[in-house]
Structure formats: C-alpha cells, structure tokens
Length: 380
Ligand code: AMP
Ligand code: MG
Image (cartoon, rainbow, N blue to C red; front, side):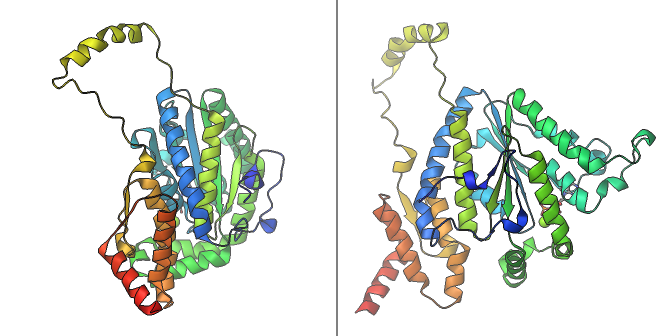
C-alpha cells in the first residue's frame, strides 16, 4: 500500500482543481478493515512524537481544518487527536464572529489561540472562513471601512495577508499546516438526510447548512482559490478526500504523523549543573524509601489490554488508539450494516478477532462470548 500523502499535498507549485479531485478516493483500499492497523499504528507514533514535542518546547504547531458542512471535521479531530496528551493540545472552534471580533481586523481573534512552544492548536475553522463564507457572501461589505480603503479588493488582499501571516509565524517558531476535508455534494446530502432520520444525530441539524448548498459552486471556487493562493512550502494545504470517513481519518493521521516527523522533536538532554547536583541526591533518595524498592518500569501504552464489546453503544476499551480503531470499525457504518439486516455480530466478531490476531489482548465480554456461541450454533 502506498502510504505517501504527496498526492494530497499542495505546497505552492501544484494547482488544486476541484473538478479533477475525487472526494470518494479510497487510495486503493477495499474498506476500513484494511486501514485500521495502519491507523492505530500512526496514532501510537503520533502520541510518542507529541510527548517529545511537548518535552522539547521548541516549536508550536497549528492544524487548521476547513471543510463544507458535514464533511467530518469534528469526527476527524476527535479520532485523530484523541490519544494526545491534553496538556499539549487545545482545540479552538471559530464561529460567526461576535460584534467585538467584528470591530477588529479579521486576524485579531486568532492571536490568543496560537500555541505556545511545544503545543498543538487545532483550529476547527479559522481565518480561512474570511475567504470562504466571507468571499461567497461578501461579508466584508457589512463592515465599516475607512474612506481611504473604499473600493479595495478585500478578498484578493486577504490571500496575500494570510500567506504573510503564516510566513511570519513560521519564521517566529510556529508551523501552520492546513487540511481541507473535501466532501462531495452528494455525500453531503446523504449526511444531511441522516441528520434528519437518525434521532441521535438530530442535534447536528442546521437549516442554514442545508440552504447553503445553493451556493455550492461558489464555495468550490472559493476553496480552489484558497488552496491555490495560500499554499506554501512552509505552510502547505492538504486536500483530503472525505466521502469515506475512515479514509479521511487515515489520511489525516498520516499528515499529522508526517508533520511531526519533519519537526523531529526529541527529549531534551538534561546534563547541566542541575542534573549533576541531582545525582548527588540520588543515593540519599533511595536510602529514604522505606522498603528500598525502585519503581518497576511501566508498560508501554500499546501493551495495555483492551476490552471490546460488540454492542455499538458500548465499545469499552482501554488504550485509546485501540478505542479509535474499534470506533472506525464499529461506528456508524457498523450500525448501518445492522439496519440493512446483515450480520452485525459477524462484522463485530471479525473486528475483534482482527485486533486479537494483531497482538492485542482482547478481553471477551459476555456479549462477545454469546455472539461467538450463536454464530457457532448457526454454522452447526
Ligand atoms: P459550526 O462550525 O458548524 O458550528 O458553524 C460555525 C459557523 O460559523 C459556520 O457556518 C461558519 O461559516 C461560520 N463562521 C466561522 N468563521 C466565520 C467568519 N469569519 N465569518 C463568517 N462566518 C464564520
Ligand atoms: Mg455548521
């Protein structure tokens, strides 16, 4: 399997054309089961690199997420960043600007969301809204401008300002990596329908989002211009096919992993005067331990046992990467299969046995045991 993300990367030279891009691309995979092991593996690697990034505190990192509604931004963010340490990661959701925000320049509200060295900020929407919805709806026309700026090409200027802004951040110690989850118009319609049909998704419904489909083509033009005018080597755009949620999640995990690999963080070496002095206390510390025992080495995160239940509402696991893996296997699609009357249990069991075969300790719950017994009975 080709694990390169070069195909989806725009760094200034290659032009992005919305017409030629396939949002249903699965990169040669047949289905999610094939993707799961790599995904879990990526999350583990991301987790280790993030710990180093945080320890080293040399550089801040921003992941910007932009997409049409229902493209799966929230799900991608939830699954890919789920396993990171909360002290080094923060998500910021940017909504319609408040009246206070509107009374400032459009970049003003982002300064305070930038990460300190060693941390990651996730921008769930960003200043790119100002060249997306801002461009499609010409929102700048509702703002007041000084006379000297009347008649300026506001949007045209913004591409340039954003490029400069991100360059400035890069040169001062913060990387910005941008991800556009590209969903098709058909798939968006399907997801809106399911937001209407499935009670637990009703809360995501927004009439406004549905009406916004009227402007689909204008949005695609805006996305195209955004990618083509703000992609740089230092601050690339990745356009990710988003019709298959599991594939989008896999690709985003690759992007995050690759970015961290490029940053190449490592634990700082502490061999200064303080360390020398601490060494002198070492024996005294050991002597002061009542039973004289030193700590056992802790198990690696990936060696922790997991517990899987095949009930969709009750996927209980320990060790987060595995939880995500199971969610990919046992989430929405899984539910759909049961609705279609196909064997939910069979599907669940194959997921469980796959995890078990790949070296995870699977603790069989009552439901799983019952399902195994039932399926054995059927086989005769
Ligand atoms: P959601 O993320 O679905 O909760 O929706 C947030 C909404 O805020 C979206 O409809 C965005 O288009 C909108 N939004 C975010 N930033 C801006 C902005 N700078 N100007 C206008 N609308 C924005
Ligand atoms: Mg919305």
